[in-house]
Image 1 (cartoon, helix red, strand yellow):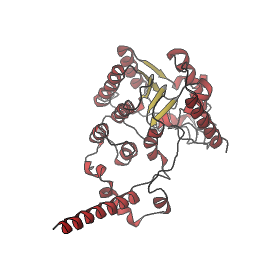
Image 2 (cartoon, rainbow, N blue to C red; image 1 turned 60 degrees about the vertical axis):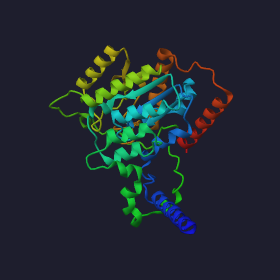
Image 3 (cartoon, one colour; image 1 turned 45 degrees about the vertical axis):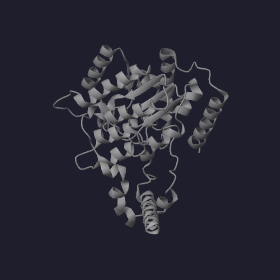
Image 4 (cartoon, rainbow, N blue to C red; image 1 turned 60 degrees about the horizontal axis):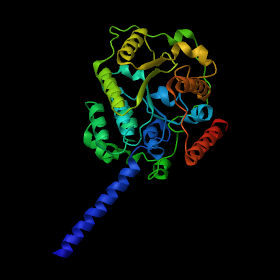
Length: 339
C-alpha cells in the first residue's frame, strides 16, 4: 500500500514538473516585442527610489532614470507598459508600495481616456510580469476582457499550449530567464523618423469629451493611496500630441480641474516642447508618435529640473553602494546609447 502511494505521489510530481517545463517553454518570450518584459524587470531594482513613473508608452519612452540620475542626482524607476490602463497603473502603484515608499509618483494621464478593458495582448504585457499577490489578482480581475479567463493567467499553459508548433530558438534560450531589455524601465529607441507634417497630428472630433468615470475613480484611488503612504502624486502629460495619441483640450481641462480640487500638481508638457528643445525632425523614431532617446534626454533633463526645484527631489545623501549601483547603470545606458 505504501509503495503504491509513493508511486502515485512520484507520478504526480513528475507530471507537474513536465507541465511546468512545458509551460515555461510555450509562454511568449517577448524578444521581438520587449514591452512585455518591462513590468517584470522592476523587482531586480525595487527599493530606494526618489520617484517612480507609472503609465503607458509615454513614460517608458520619455523618461530615462540613468540620465535623470546623472544630470540631477534623482534615483527613479519607470513602471511603464504598453497601453497601461489607469486601473493597471493603480495596481502597479499598490505593488510598488509593497517594496518601497518613493517621495513622489509621476502618473502620465493619457490612459484616462480609456474606461473599459481593451485588449488581451496588452493586458498580458502588463499583468504577466507582476509577481503573484492579492494585488496582481485584483489587477487581473479589473483588466480582463469578456473573452478572457482568470484561470488562463494562473496557468498560462492553458492559453498558450498551441504555441508548441510555433516554437523558435528564443523560446528555448529564454525558457528560464528573461532577456534584460530596459534601463530601469526606460526602453531605448535610437532610430530617427521625423514627423511628416503638422496635418498628421490633427485629432478627430469626439461626440463626448468626458473622461470615463471608471478611470477617474481609479485616479482618485491612486491619489488616496499616495496620501495614505506619504507619497506625493504628480500628474503629467508627455510632450507628444500626435495622430497616434491625441490629447484634447477638453481632457486637459478636466485633469486641471481635478488637480486643482485635490491640490495636486499637473504638468502638461505639450505646450513646453519649444522650451524643452524638442525637434520633431530629429527627436522621434516613429513620425512623431513617440520620442527617441535624443528627445527623451531633453525631456528628462527638463523635467528633472522641475522635480529638483519644485518638489525637492535629489537632495538626499545616498549610501556608497547606492551611488555605485547608479554609476553602473549610467555606464550601461551610455554604452547602448553610443553603440
